[in-house]
Image (cartoon, rainbow, N blue to C red; front, top):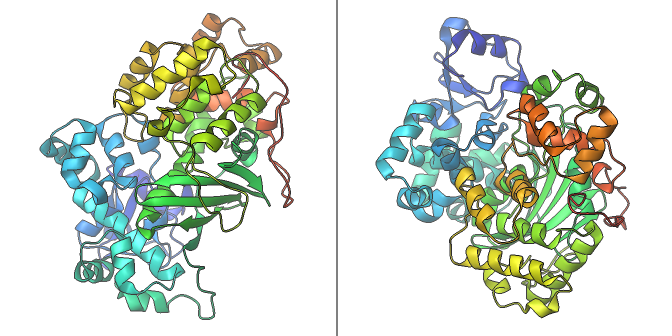
Length: 508
């Protein structure tokens, strides 16, 4: 989009926040780059130039605006909408692969040469993987500098820098302030962060309807791993360097986020996974505009615009839970998952109480005894096949996975029908165009709205909703009387509600 000069100029002059993250405005006279919605007086048109990423602007010698903080703008929705090499690379970079394994590790995960990855990222984003990772480190460093009292040396290594010298140089170059000056800008008297805890505001593009988003996560919460408590969705996180616990609370203009981390090096990855879980980088204007063209969907969109797809923090975890939930109620699925957690999950300490375990890893589940689960033999075999494929590396459900290849591999596993495959594609892989025409809730909604009710006919009608059929699914589900559609109460003792028994496909 940054190549469409006139469109970018209009977005900047109107301070249109919808375009934050799509491109960045660099001012030739001040050598500062901003987000489109920057509150300062827009520069003269002849002094504007545009970049597709913060890393590209930094690489061209521009420093971040202190008013609008462009490095903290919502991410480009392209990386969650697309499944090509560049999008997969960006998801992996956001998940910290560059910090842990460098360019060779990124190339190995993607299955392409380092040279090809470098060339494609530079062609589309104006910066290579090293510059993109450097921009992310700078953002992480700023968060730690401004919200904690950690010594600067610890901040440097926690943010992923190899040396304190590189940390100092990068912070000065990106923010035009030394690390000490950056910390001094924080309001005096602000309470220091609790050890291991950080409080953040996660931005999103408006509108956002939180009901189905948080309702879904709360209604399907696995005991010990997730809970809804005091107006927040809380869950444990398995991160590269240790464990974490997050509390996410919906606010009118942001998502309140509290993170407890065993290792600060996991901060960027934890934020990335929280944003992905809540689908915060989506472009609701584009989604709702297309879905509103269908006269049967338009009233649903107008009633509650900006619905997001509730995604997950861990792909393998969700795949296991999807198998456990086949042909049973949500409450029964939570019971089965809770038993696995108690038997095979890794214990954690929750400073706020309530959470007890990480969800079991595939390696831990490889040792489980199928007899412990009160399920049909066929579903036990399905679970065993899934765990085996995950442990052997035959199935990739992480953020950088190839959606088409993963779908095909899932379909080859015993017991994986279209409903299970599409559910995993929607919530674990993040495919915005997954669709479940056989889902019972979808069929009820179709009948009530006058849509075709047979799976084949509904699938043909839904072709007009591409590439946003995952979002259409949320609007259709929202027509039903189900706890996943309701924002839970905010009282301190609130817990996920049980649901009534349902057939296959009604459990979400």
